[in-house]
Length: 319
Image (cartoon, rainbow, N blue to C red; front, side, top):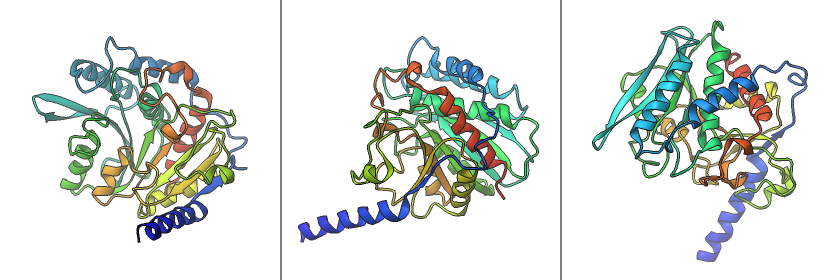
């Protein structure tokens, strides 16, 4: 019986590979679009997040507070609707940072990324890259006419020992929306969007067969959804592939498969919101994951900028 179940699981995973992965090269529509993200601005914002005297993990609350205020001040260049969401864990106060754009009373689209790290490291890709992504989106969204309210949120306490607990900043934020009965259009998690490689063998997969179909070079971005990720996530995927300036893939599978729930979007799923993750596939590509070697020089800011451009062009076209 155990052998049968093992074979059945393998068959299910193979079916997931063939029927839920989609591969999209740079779209014809986006091929000649101008670059929007500014590499110098990305470098400036990386400095705001990375330049601290100690690592920004949960034990260094003062460092987390310093980075949170830097993010808020950067947000405030582009909107006067910024703030902190504070909550207590044990004897410490931790802070999510937010900025809002668009009509105040409209449905909300949340674009979030966590600013804390796991241990004694810079965490340039994990996940300063995601935070810098939402900071750059703030610049792009200023004065942009929007149909929906867009909330950019920088979360705290995504990393261990709080991962998968109700102390995650994204859980606190998602629950607050649910408790207020706030209409939510959907949520996008930016999780590790800075590391890319054109080297053969630089990309691995949760199912080995996938590399024979989709290649072994880590030079693309992935949209990760679960089996019931909802209409917003599905629409975002379609529009992103119409506007992608970088090669992109879509992976849709049950939450237990291949780390598909390993970021802040998982907490919005818990409250019934449509959500997805934009990622470079984390440890399936970047060997610096949760290591002291996760530093800024390892990242490709040009490709990261193209990923951000795709997110921006997609969200302003959501219907």
